[in-house]
Image (cartoon, rainbow, N blue to C red; front, side):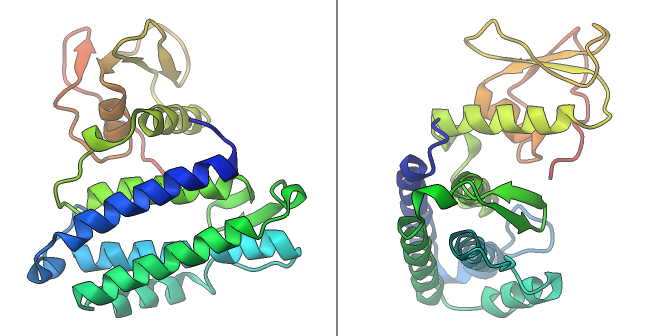
Length: 238
């Protein structure tokens, strides 16, 4: 999957449309039902996705203007906004998601080419502005799964699953962790996490399933372990 932010915006648009179709198909009473995220209803997930769009817009505006504009005023404000929006009706959620998507698209279109290299301060550390489009795509696709409404990692586009897996492996490899090797189906390439000692297990399976397991969105039932044994516990993701 390309790293070009302007090309990735089309992927964000498509991911948003998939999310809206899933959300729009929900029975309104299902919004109060549990999502895959502990303590959050489906309404919490949708509110988080809407406010996440605004957070990325704030960072893009900061990159464009050279001002230090935080994603959220603070963690408390973020949580309060999600809680306040969680109990809304379905139409309000859908309108909010569409409006957030429009603001995101407008913020991307307004970015001068030379400002995509600007560094912004997110709650997870400094990022180059160009990475914010991928950040938004990842948020939509992962939380679409968290909605627990019939969209699963197997439904992720192939390019998204591949990029997510490589990103997660790269991030985990920077931490101290037990050695682990991953072999995506259809490739002879082995991705490694932790020190390469030859002592760790090799976990193999579909790319999307490996990525979902590493980020805690799958129990890994479609994966195999060599030598034969239980799946190891992956390190915590972001």
